[in-house]
Amino acid sequence: MEYIDPDECIDCGACEPVCPTKAIFPESDLPEKWKEYTALNAEYCKKWPVISEKKEPMPGGHGPDMDY
Image 1 (cartoon, helix red, strand yellow):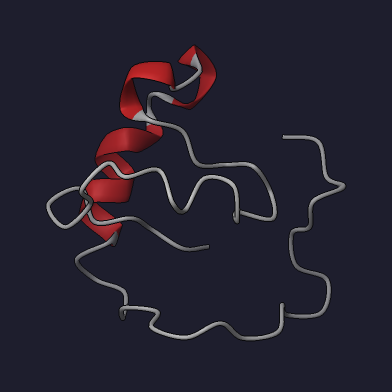
Image 2: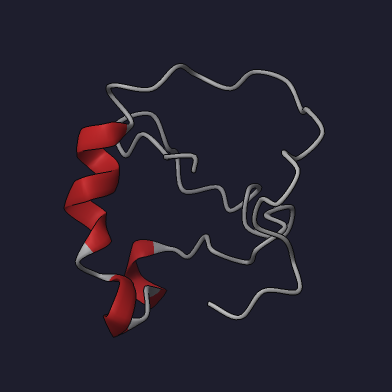
C-alpha cells in the first residue's frame, strides 16, 4: 500500500488518473466509506519511504479490476 503525504501534496490531481486502482480522491470528494483512512494515511506516509520511480506491481497485488 502506498500513502500520500498531505503536507507535501499540492492538490494538483496528477496522481488520480494514473492510480491503477482508482483509489485517490481529492479530500473534498472522498467517499464517506474511506474517510476513516485520512488520518491513517497521514500517519503512515511519515513512516514509509518515498516512492520516486515506477516499478512493476507485486504478484497478487491490487489491480485495476478489483472492486473497492
